[in-house]
Length: 492
Ligand code: B12
Ligand code: SF4
Image 1: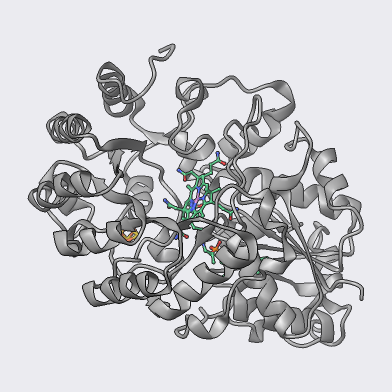
Image 2: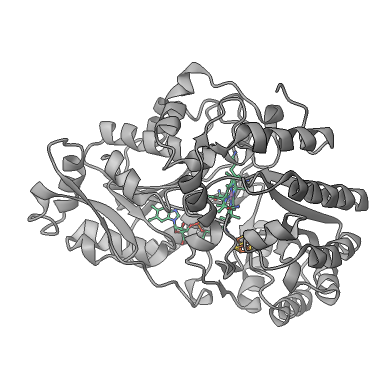
């Protein structure tokens, strides 16, 4: 059966963007959930995971277009903010090669920048905002069968005046839209359909389409035990992507998936990727009881939240295989915790993290530094806390603030400060995760200059690549982090 959609995963942990590539392959959860929903609705999905592209130069456009050979009439691309520049240029290369295909972007990368992306990059036809299962099914029904794009909640798209009347008449209507999108004479109107209501019954969705991938090729087996987070941290891009609402799976459903993957693919270590696994004590204790009752020989890692954990819960988690607990501590300064609306104090952090370090084999503490309103006194309070936790045996993961377009802190900063691009200090979030490669610095080889020109020309679409006040805010703090051994020594 010919495919209706080619769905491409570009959520990747390629440690070095511009130089040599190191890979760690993670199961592409978002695309596999989408595939499941689309197939259940009767669409044929040609899923391709770009993590598996064997080339050593995956960011060469020809490598990408060859990987996408013979795509279906609709191409869906899923990415995070770090690969959004590549994804946008890759979409143009696809449109040049296959002008009649409809290009749909989704995932957290384009979220928050839909208007500017659609206005500036006419080869992008549709952007799916947020949770995709129901949106993708309705969108495909319109694209395949004809209908009205404006009836699909959760998408942003471009309507060109000259095709407005035709739009929605037949199956070719949107492919026409795609072609006309490239026509400079058309006057585009970017349309943002209303948001889509979140899926509340996560158990009812079933498991991701595991059968579409060879599980043995992946190193990391992510799972989502919940979706979304109700907190309001101003720097966070997760909560806005899920509209600040959170829904959890039942303990039975979570353990069913663990048991299925363990028995069918021998998976032993599970990474709970959602931030809100610890949504409440009863939920966590029920999960631990259920996992223990099944007697599975598995281990797992999860996020905790300082104000929602206690020692009894932590013991229950460790007793049933939790090897690692991660805390978003963010800052050791109460002033900063309050300004970023974290919802707990540094005293609460001090009550929870030290016992956690005693209970779990590994505890990760994440910090965000480089807020322009973080004084050196605030920063030193964080530094003091980091040093203390490191001496106790915790792992410290500081991240330079990334101003992602969905976040409140970006909106504050964009209106008050100049965003600065620093070619030798790219935010480590973008390229390396927390394993800072090459001391957080890199040279940009000539063949990749186009990505960086795109970034510097469009700071409002890619603000995560920019900083505020390099001289007085970022560099002095980086220097201290280096002195205390939290970052490798660099060239500057
Ligand atoms: C797992 C994960 C990873 C995995 C990705 C695995 C994979 N192959 O998919 C790995 C470990 C590779 C990873 C890496 C990074 N990640 Co990450 N990661 C996550 C995490 C924890 C879960 C993602 C997930 O599986 N979600 C579950 C699925 C169901 O949701 P989803 O992917 O968003 O997909 C849904 C919708 O977005 C939509 N959708 C998605 N794609 C498409 C496509 C189409 C066509 C359509 C219609 C719809 C659609 O439908 C899906 C189902 O509802 C999120 C946090 C979170 N809770 O979301 C961070 C997150 C996505 N990561 C983030 C970041 C920043 C990174 C890094 C860049 C750096 C870092 N410090 O972590 C690195 C990349 C480093 C590098 N050098 O390349 C940020 C992204 C910010 C942003 N706005 O882009 C997040 C939000 C965390 C955060 N701290 O803010 N990550
Ligand atoms: S940083 Fe964590 S707690 Fe805060 S809103 Fe984001 S996911 Fe929720």
